[in-house]
Image 1 (cartoon, one colour):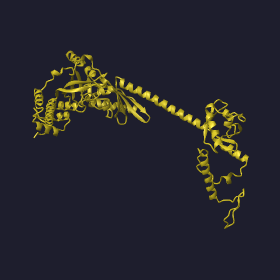
Image 2 (cartoon, rainbow, N blue to C red):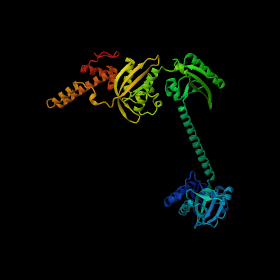
Image 3 (spheres, rainbow, N blue to C red):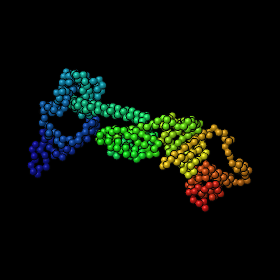
Length: 524
């Protein structure tokens, strides 16, 4: 290009005789041309995303001849196809030897639609139709059959050149292979995951069902990581309460030293001889064995506790005690033994039937409050009275089954002191079938109802309602005090009142409890 002399305002004419324009004017002209094309043929630019277009394409490519343009297309694509107006292949070039060996070379003279699989013909027809209506098409994928019998995915973009269409293709075999590898890897991961889940499920089931007490201990800290139900039963705790505690715990001094020596030997040599250990209360002796487990960089100790059965001649209960235990087990009333926190240690068959539980193992370790009618209230009232008076008699409430049934019951209970580990016995009777006529009623209640009826018409309804509310409130407070054995704190909890509110109402109605609570403040 020739430059204009200094100071000249006009530009030299171009090859067509039109005045030459500066670079800025040329770019502005191209921008206006693209806007006109977009307005006239919006489909021509659909799918064409130009991140950074050439600044002067005519200056850069205006001198290209046909051979150079063909070489550029062959080098930039994996396959290029020239199609006439009728859709017949006029020419073809391959930029990849692998692709050339897999595709048939007799495309020339054949309709291009016959070179693709039947399910890809709709995409190819859409590509040719779009090319005939616009300058550049968007990318579309079709599948060609190969001479080896496999499908070859090719992604095409077509450009219209006069009456012909040039389709530029990219081979997607590499991407398809990567996608297949990703799918295979994902499926392998899922298979491994489900296999591990199945193994873990079998392990959990075996761990829970095995009759021997088994503990898994963290080797460095000697804290319990896992414990099966049998271990919790032998140690007098639920498995969840055992987890996280140091081991050994609850054994006598000699047993603790023996177990520590066993664990130290297993950590050092991988094995050690079994040892004997007794609980701190001396009621049970165990044969303790351990083995070392390694998981990645962590070490665990598998500890097995086998109870030592004393000779039957010395361990057999007296006949009268044995009969007594059999009677309790088959008693028509529910009998439940809990620890100091109200968690079930043992229960007879009648309790299992009323609570709709299949086995005693399902109840062990659970709070008795789970089945009582007023969660968070009934058990607290019972436990408070047991700690204070050692016994509770005829506490009325309801028992809820696992499947929604409700039974009216009366509870009597007793506390048994056992050093630092007391336990409680609950005797639960089903009273749902008792006749309502047998329920004791206060003689004051029918008189009050008769007096209320007689005053209708003589006293305004508002005053009758207020007096009735006061009477009902007083009767409820008296009933709560009677249920709790005149324990004001428990009665307040039973009624859902604060202690101070209950004391105010007792003073208001002149209710005098028969046995004041020792810890309660003065009524005055």
